[in-house]
Length: 368
Image (tube, rainbow, N blue to C red; front, top):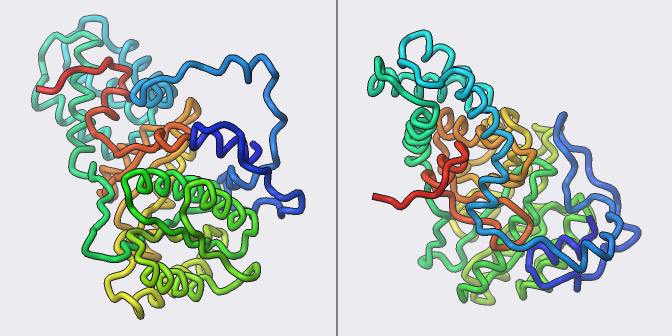
């Protein structure tokens, strides 16, 4: 996708942005099984004139979330339908039912917890498939609720520093762009730091987003510059210019884990020379299409730096969205944000109830 098309989706302002320079390098190799950064992909052909003239009518966020979870929803509901017409919830039914959340990427631990909840509260009752789906949504929401916490920007820190980490391909740069636009609209002064210094394409993309959102960008003078030194300069400048928020992009070369770990730890050490409490947030970006691999990535980055929260991106029709439940059950890291598209408004605070009901394909229901 061309950068101008991607920018148009993020901002909803149309394809105003210039394309990436023709001599931009190709995407860096990511870890095994991971896609290259979407932002660094070759420009796609322009859409047919008919498509451009008649864009899809915008849908609400929850409708897009439900559509994005369709793959996991099918895995859950088809298995439930196969087990239940109207049937007593006995041991045999529970054993069959346990396969449904595992097939939908919720993981073994979360699946067993859900089934134990059913055994305590509904064992021996006659139930329908629809009743099972409603109850399953309640059990999933109970797992997610403790980790559903917003990304809070502390005004006591000036600026609040957010270190954004994750492997190449998860959408760190576009997540930074979306956050920058959202916080700018709230009246905050936001700065970006292009800390993925080895990928010229990532630096250029962040500079384009900075121009369009009105967020100044601290960029390296040369490819391969020291990322820690750039972070130090960015924090110095952000303080001098009275910024409220500093969002720092980072490299994600997980195939060279030891080098990446040292680089991230050095960034943290250097930031703390200026502000002992920095970074105030470490946001891990995970790609929902990778399924259970996202859990391993989260474990690795938690070893490298003190991950304080997660943003889950790319919840489209190919997503294995059930992994969000497995993340909550197995790692208990706060889930801040969920992304269902490429526009700024498609990145929203994570809601346990909305996610659980969308995962089961259930309609919105008034709270209370």
